[in-house]
View 1: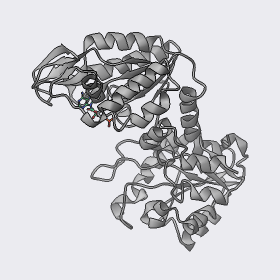
View 2: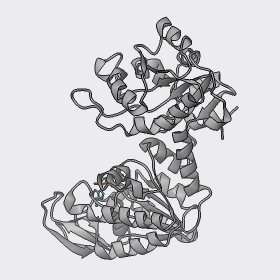
View 3: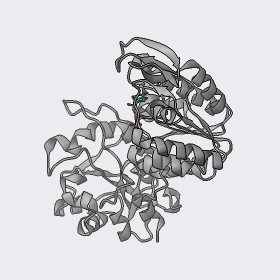
View 4: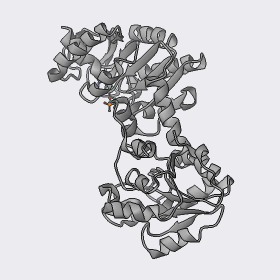
Length: 396
Ligand code: AMP
C-alpha cells in the first residue's frame, strides 16, 4: 500500500484531497472541526519533512459558485487547528491559482476554493482533474468520506500521478481498520447490525456472513425477522416484502455456522414518541397498538455476553430509537459493552452513519478502537465494494 512513508516530501508539493465538508452555523463558524483535526497528521508530516501542501475539498452541495459554501469560512479554524498560516486561493482553477501553487515555498499551505463550484468535479472531468494535478508533484488522498465517488479530485486525478500518489494517514487507517475486521480478523468476530430497515442493510449482511461468527441483529430490522418467524410484532416497523429474505438470511447463517442473535424482549411503546407509555414485552408477543422501540433487558444480557467474548467487533446501526432518551438505553449499553470488550483487547470498528452519531452522543468515541469518518464510503466497503478512490491509488 502506498502511504506517506513511501515518499520523501522535501521540496515537494503535495496536492491533498481532504474532506473539509464541515458543519457551519448561521454565522459561518465551524461547529465541529473533527474532519479538519483528522487531516492534521498528514499535513504536519509533509510540512515537517520540508514539503509544501495544496489542500482541496468540497463543502456542501453548491449549485455553481455560492458564497455560503465558500471554503473561506473555514480558514480561521484551519489555521487554529494546524497552528500555521494558510493561503487561500479564491478559485480552484485559473492562472492566478496556478501561480500561487507554483510559487509555494517549503512549509507553506494553500487551500483551494470549493471544488464543487465547478460541475466538472462531480462529473469526473479529465481536463479539470489534469489542471488540479498540474499544481502538485505528489497526489495524496486523505478523504475517506468521498472515496466511494469517482470525482475528479478523488479518483480521476490519480492517473496524472502514475507513480507519485499515496494514501494519507486517515485513509490508510480506515483501510487498515476495515481489513482488521473483514480480512485479518481475530476470532470470534461479531457484527452488530441495527438501524431501521433490512432493505438498507441486506448487502452488508450478505457480504459479512462469510466473515463473522456472531451477528447481532437489532433496531427496527428486528421485527421483519420476528414476523417472518411467526411472532406478533404489534405496530412495530416491518418490511413485509423482506420477510422471505429475512428467513433466507437465517438459513444462510445456519449453513455458514454463524450464530444470529435477535432481541428476545423489547421496550414497547404505545406511540412513536419520547413520552409514550412503555412496557417490557417478549419480542414475539407485542400487543396491537404497541411498537418495539428499544432492546429489552434480557436481550441486552445476551448481547453483553456475546460482545464481551468477541475479539473483533463491527458495529453498524443503533439497536433502538436512540435519538429519544426513553429509547436510548439499548444503544448506549451496546456501546458500553463494546467499550469494555475493547478495553479487554478486542478490536472494535464503528462505522456508517447512525451508530457513529450514537457513539458521539454517548461520548464513547475514545472507548472504541476506531470510529470511521466516512458514512457512505464505509457502508460500501462493508458491502464488499471496491471504492474508486482507493482503487485509483492502488493501481499502477
Ligand atoms: P439506519 O439509517 O437504517 O441505520 O437507521 C437508523 C435509524 O433507525 C435511527 O434513526 C433509529 O432511530 C432507527 N431505529 C432503530 N430502532 C428502531 C425501531 N425499533 N423502530 C423504529 N426505528 C428504529
